[in-house]
Figure 1 (cartoon, helix red, strand yellow):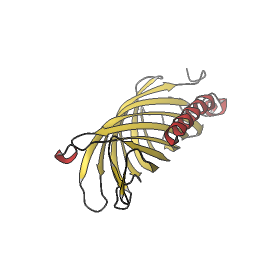
Figure 2 (cartoon, rainbow, N blue to C red):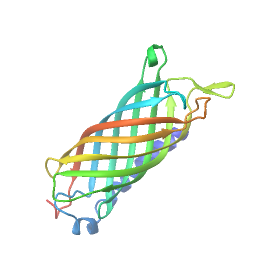
Figure 3 (tube, rainbow, N blue to C red):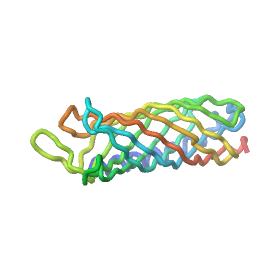
Figure 4 (tube, rainbow, N blue to C red):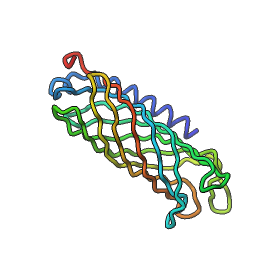
Length: 203
């Protein structure tokens, strides 16, 4: 139920972002190369720990999809959905999958350069599956938990409509059950393609 509600929420947010991107005010004051709406599809690699304190670290991999819409000079609202999976963790038969759904704000350092660095903070939830998550005296198969991420990245604009997410690094914290504090620390690395939708005036 929580996962279905989160998916519906993310869909509503994406539609709101698309509608908000049509607002003329952002385009009127935008620098060259500005696009009020951007949609990103990216690959992500995730270095995470199973238990806080010792490493027990392993890699997950997957993908991200996000939509961002400008609301003020340099400031955008962002909706992001990501899914990641790992198998044979630490040379065992154990696996882990999760889907995160996050929402928040981004500040982009826009200028006339093709390179656009940004920083962002997103908060939302995470749904774990394909594993047994240990709780107090019981294992949970499909838990939902709070999550947030903070990080920075760099886009390279190729044309008015296409850019590359050259690199992005985020600290991602999730609170899935692990019977040891219920907290996981992740380092997420991302690269992908950005589809840009400039306003009519920018074209």
